[in-house]
Amino acid sequence: MEIEKEIKKITLGHEIGAGAACLKCKDKCEGFDLHFWRKICRNCKCGVEDHDVQLETEENKKVGKLFEDTKYTGLIAKLKKDGIPSYKGNQVTFSIPAATISTATPVPASTFVPGSSQTYTPSSQSAHAPPVAATAVPGASIHFPAAPATGRTAASGTGHTAALGTGHTAALGTGHSASIPSKGPGAATTAVPTPTAVPAKTDVVKSVTYEWAPPGINQGLALLYMELLPPERRPIAGSAGADYRKKQMAKQLPDHDQDPERCHELTPSEVKQMQQYVRKYKDEALGIGDITLPEEMGLQAGLAGESGPQGVGAGGKPGAGTTGTPGDKGDAIATMGKVGAPGADGTSLSGPAGNYSCHRCQLPMKKGEPAVFAERAGYDKLWHPACFVCCNCSELLVDMIYFWKKDQLYCGRHYGDSEKPRCAGCDELIFSNEYTQAEGHDWHLKHFCCFHCDCVLAGETYVMEKDKPVCKPCYMKNHAVCCAACQNPIEPEAQRVSYGEHHWHAEPQCFQCSCCSKCLMGQRFMALQGMLLCSVECKKKIMAS
Image 1 (cartoon, rainbow, N blue to C red):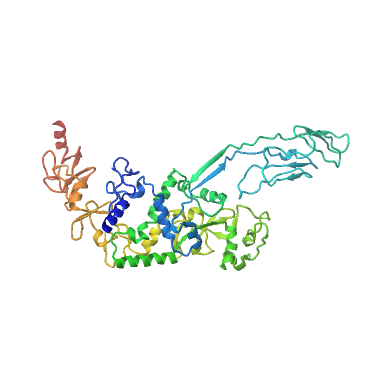
Image 2: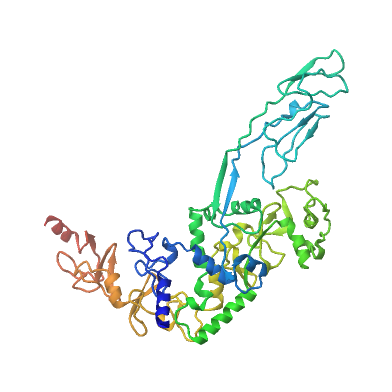
């Protein structure tokens, strides 16, 4: 009964995605059929990530397993549900108002009346955008309401027209105008129209669903982070970016790098070595990026007792020459280095934040723009969202999951490659002491075999086709070119002559003039529709016949 259960378990594992169409080969593939150890489709040789297989549940289990029993207790609380390690992909839908939506018409500076009290309602803007500068007539009092107006222009008074004298305040009513003497009685008056209110548009909203967005932060900051990624890498549902994330999840975090049960026929000794390897990277390298604002990093460094740039250290004290303004934005403003307080002379909301620069591109970080922070790297390092990539493959680290080693960020795959040899046949890390090195790759002894028929190639003739070893019979059947003279396939070890798309055995009986049968080895020749000719005379004879 136990044997039957084990067989059923293996069968069900290989039924995941069975028959799914290949997105790369289209109709050429009969459907996904997982090879029993190569991690590819038997029919088309493409990976599971290239097929239309829904892997969300499997991916969540894989990442949950990755972070199980690690130092990130807070993260584990997020990932675990009912005691079972499971990762929630954090699919988020943002409702973005259209840029053209407004609730009121701004009052031009020329219409502000000296001595009057008016309300200006700015159009919607980003939380991190610089404040709008308004120019007012001297003596006017302009009020900026805390909340956006609802489509009306606030006005004081009873809505009547008033004549203004020196030192008096007029109450302006909607749709009316005021007469304003310029210098005492009898002076010329100027009619100042009051702006007409514009009804608010409340039904113009754009919804964008992301397959993943940074968890644990407000949606405004998360949306800013997504907008700083390359457009083709943003995981918007149904887009090329979502497909990119799916493929990178499979490539960067292979489940057979973390779970011995996903590997093929490990010995007890190899299982123990793999468990030690997994424990090591969980303790020393594995992490997940956090989103922060550069101007807030000094405070975090102080709370952690570490140093940030320009000597920002314990307690979040600012560096030399810093003039922070506690209370404006908590104590975070006090740790901003040279930037100082918002609104101070010489500062800009889009300017550099302290002395932080991106650890990868070395360009300065901008205040108000989200940056990625890696706990393993320390509080003195930040990355632009688009720069948080693997140092080996330069791909965005999927879901900001990283491995830190020797002052570099790695994806899971290339961290594993830096620690252990990887079998080019099964894609698994090699934990045995004996393995084969051939054609610039490492192989399990039992996996250096034909890519087509799986026969072992030790001591046998093989040919490398597209970086894959192929035995001679499979080569002759699937890859060998035919001789244009005898029409027989040319063996891999045989010499041949190629000209354009045509090939010949490098032998006198094949590589000869099609007219006079003269051997052309080492001689000048001309080709005509796949025929070899030794001279112009033979060419004329062939064309005349």
